[in-house]
Image (tube, rainbow, N blue to C red; front, side, top):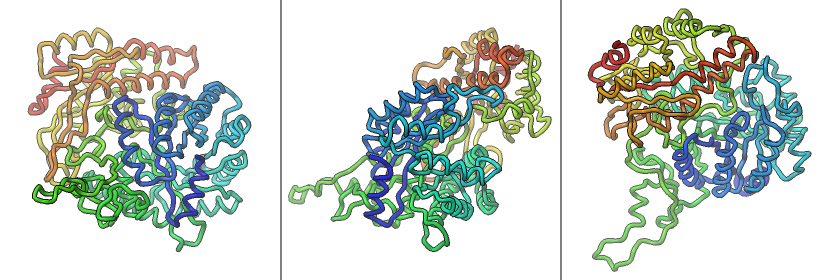
Length: 612
């Protein structure tokens, strides 16, 4: 079904705003399977459509198509995102034909970012340089077979708002049927922007992009990545709770709920917002809670109990919902359990159920994402903006930050400059932010490791029980205690890896993974083993393990890490010394991640790595 048809049916049957849910294809097979379970659970909240992202240059093509096929089974309105940057016409044709064969009738046509600096970027096909080009092509080749959407940027994609609006109108005039906006956090600013959109004659449906705040760190990263305007009052509200991840999540739910109520209210003077697009990041709890608070999830039955249709409450540890439309997992189980043996032998009325969220399980990286590593089984593992190139920078920015290294010594100096923090701009392609407070505690050790030609890109010190509200190490709910094992990750030469492998054979408490650009993996861990390197204990909850290093997670990160070498190299001409150096380093070096399990001794890992 086309999205516009779904919207028309919804509007004709209810005054409640309609909404869509966005997912991205997980990077691992187990994450993909777990996402399918989430799709089944979220389908009962009755979204008007489900959308699936598409990696730049078609990098997630097969997984995106497979996920679109799966969502099509859950919801007849599936929206497949499609970018034209670095995409040859044959790949576009194949993607569109494959989508049609899977029953997908909705395309979100996007330009996407160039996969490298604009100075050396040459489009694969000059016909596709803008989203409007893609819209025109789909219309010309497929007529009205697809319902086509385009993106819009309430906070601006450039410094010229008039040009932005003109470009949006061009995309609509090329054949777009609906608009989905990028995420925003300024409701008043969004309404002003929407009024301007309507004033220039754009009348197609506009779905407001909403991304619930999941954690303080991810909020800062995503708003920076998307250049979103953040009201000072929002930052002021988050600052006091930034170390309480549970409080941040709760605040994110309340803030998104209030913002949606503001933009969908008929009380403001301006165009009415009838549609919302939730960027779920493959996480379900926050979106579910927002929909419950809005009262938007009561149109589909989930559990039949005493004549009422109810949804199973997603978080078994949450207080009972005030909504009569929700039921706890425990009450739902009671509703279908056999009656007492002394009764007549009859059982409770037959019910129709869909899987509830697992109850009383240990919280995972999904609940409190703490760092890059998480469980590769998570549907949200590896989340990042799918439309950005790895570095997300221009050629001039890359040259300003990291110069034009021509020798190994130049690269060594770059990594050391970052560690020594010569300026706020002392970064590397793998470490875009200044040195973190916890890293300062092990900084002399990292400098010594890097001085030996082993370029560190990630690390953490050992921590033996500190409060969860600690300014440096704290995370998770309040009144808890957190722990860390020390780990260090670096690029090294093959001979260094051989030395480490030999040393690790006589130290049982050291575990490592190593990978190269060819996809080869070396480790001293058995298949299926994993390292929980961060964990916490909290009142009334089981042990939480938000940071885990295991084979699938490391392999996915190694692929990305070596991809950054390739991306960096593409900012320089093919025959240049710098490009040849970066590509040679990519092909010759190994990425190594080493963990020491003696978290009681903060020096154990560093003594192991630095002993000669």
